[in-house]
Image (tube, rainbow, N blue to C red; front, top):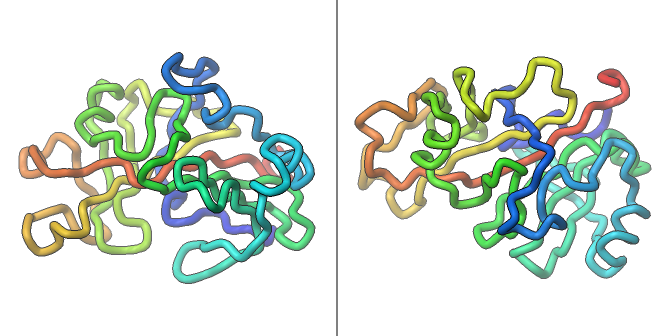
Length: 210
């Protein structure tokens, strides 16, 4: 497999279950995983979104790596998405669709999108959420949903991941959780802090997983 197993939003962390229904307030076209599947090809993307909205280029991975992949809607931040493949040379075996734009219209089926607050995630989940501290490549990744509504089924092949973020201009101003450690959404120290979803992705099984 040449494509990354995960980017910063797709580290070895807890997963979000894929729900079959889409929220009525979000166009179905921008709900993940939607029509994406492991056998989605470059040509499929071009037919679905238009050739001019599908650009093959070097895309970022974790820890400074880069890979050959696809950027959807490269000139429109509200629809931009990064697509990784198992085979980056032939662009076959879709591996992951990743979103991290502030104004993105893309949502996960449970209604989670860029900017969703940690408190709202906690409310939807119904149980505490454990996440890693900020300030490194996998900072803010959800580690454990503790069996809540967003916890994945154990046999789920296609799964979503969520990564949290903190405001960059608050660095050094407020005591946000930092570093490669585990933190809880229910810790009173984080109450009132601006912790929100900064990245969402949907991962698809590779040949070895099918």
